[in-house]
Length: 169
Ligand code: FES
Figure (cartoon, rainbow, N blue to C red):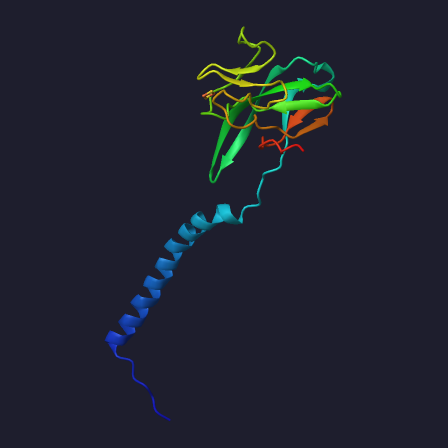
């Protein structure tokens, strides 16, 4: 049986390599976790946000409903505010439209253009949308206003994430 002799230099090399590796792992692990963690987080999408709007008080006239929520962007949480134009359509269904113009993102208003009453109007470049959110041809927007999925809970209106309006047949 041969006894392997470890020289002082080898011993120092092994020790320093081991300690260095241990320290490098200690530094790298948080960085890797920092980079990968958001990917591993469960997608919070699909959550509905409570608004102060009572469902029973929604009428056929579009009303601006402002609401706030906490947005988690990777590691940062910030308090955001948003709004929706909410009304009941002819079938009594609640409609919640995004106020963000589909041209360049300005905020649309209801019934504020005297030349086109009962329309959503974008003051930035004269964009027009019908009450159901469809864009009026010949004006800058090329798509309808996004639509919020809605829910009712405890008499209040809850809104999901606004999404492009589905094409109707
Ligand atoms: S941003 Fe609305 S019409 Fe241009």
